[in-house]
Image (cartoon, rainbow, N blue to C red; front, side):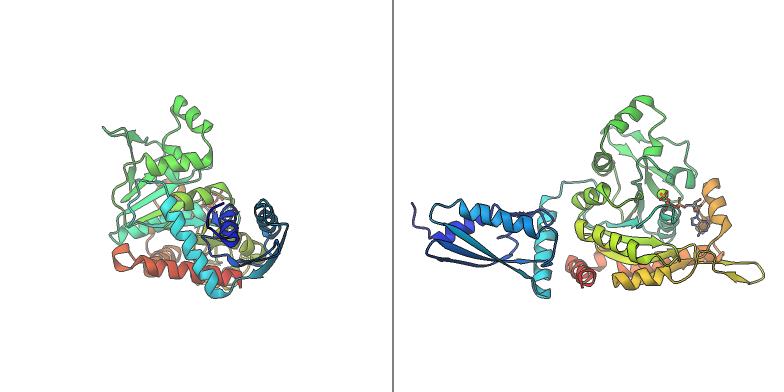
Length: 382
Ligand SMILES: Nc1ncnc2c1ncn2[C@@H]1O[C@H](COP(=O)(O)OP(=O)(O)OP(=O)(O)O)[C@@H](O)[C@H]1O
Ligand SMILES: [Mg+2]
């Protein structure tokens, strides 16, 4: 055997223990706090992000197995502790850094701000919001892309009046986004009247489809890429954070007070995908008649409650407006068709809030973003 000590060999063995959530080994992540050997018995101290996390058993068992595999070790004791706030911050930045290193190259410029419009449940107005926010940002003279990540349930093309348009390839065989109201748009709805292509897309996993939209599309250098997320909190979120580590989330919710369940779903989604949640947007916030009477049709306080639960700001309340439905059907988003309506004004305001919360890249260093991410995760965990 070489000159390395038993402790060194144990550390080497521990590199084989991967934290599946963070995607790196526990030594790299700084989770190994102590390695002692006394008469063949190894004591390993492991600090987990949350002591009661569901992965605790798995990590403990992995540690035992790996270390017991060393011939000079007869028994292993694992001491599990919870990380301090500082340690958590440190581990998150390491995991982020690793995610960035591992990220596959996409056609999205690294300086592009990526805002995923998500929700904890379906039908709350993600697509209407995505479309109006993208157009509102374009009206502020930003270069804006809109990616419809709702691969099967696409509604963006119709809402932008380009339901009949089709994506075409340029001379480099890259897909060229369709322009609508100043926004570059990509959606499966712009592909699938061609049966062969439809079959091709159908055969792809959802995350693969998203990957194609990011790697095979000739996106210009954008200031903002808005992503209309599908309902649900699974694969697409994970794929997105793998492909675009800079992605951040805005959560849309209704005024209904059922926030607890939604909040834990969103928090879980954020934690697993390392996506910071920058704000909550309450949609369908009451209805005001022409003579000024206000009706709280879907309850009240749900947006604030969710924002409080996540420890992030409520960035706007968009009232119910029948013209949103009509605008969606006519293909002219509300912020263009009825710019003076209360709902359009609220949406324009949300767009402005977003540019304050995540300013165009040249205005901000990437460290500020990492700070925000860590802060957000600490709030979620606490
Ligand atoms: N503020 C609003 N006022 C009135 N109607 C609205 C408002 N926001 C959205 N809607 C309507 O509610 C319906 C659902 O909206 P939308 O499709 O944007 O939700 P979604 O969250 O994207 O749904 P899904 O989860 O199915 O993707 C649409 O008919 C839309 O026009
Ligand atoms: Mg939708």
